[in-house]
Length: 189
Image 1: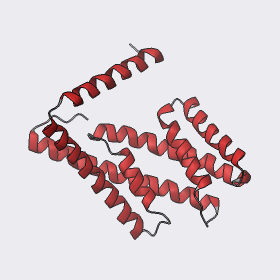
Image 2: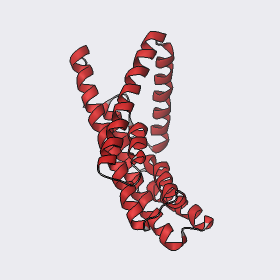
Image 3: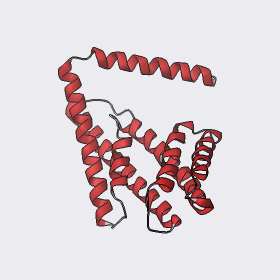
Image 4: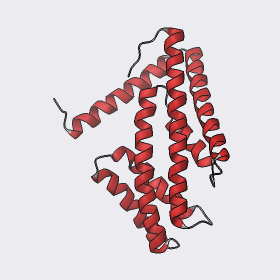
């Protein structure tokens, strides 16, 4: 049975509240351990993405590192879901950011319209979870100074986001397998 949108939102809100309560109830030592594992995973993913980006001579490899940190979640399944949203949002934001740059990238009105259209498009495509990421990518396209033509910037950003996403996924998968082997946890995939 499929829940209506309001039912899904309410279920997500309840699950989120339950998770938050669970985390607050954990002893400090467990929270410290969880935080350290999460930090290690994010730092490894970001470092890997950054150095590969530098080796590939991308214009701004730090976007790959930022993406790896942004999509890193405690488990592989959550990282995969957020990575999908990040990639879709980057594609939508990149396409509309490119259109906005070509239509008059120096205009703040064009910027506002471009971000709004990117967000609305994600919602209309039923991927609202990617909407803010589409808006962020469009913002990067239009507000971060670049010396290359807009299509080069769009392709480089998409490449850097993809690199960061792939690195985060690989690290999350490796950490998930390591945790499963060390602690005998079942594979959630």
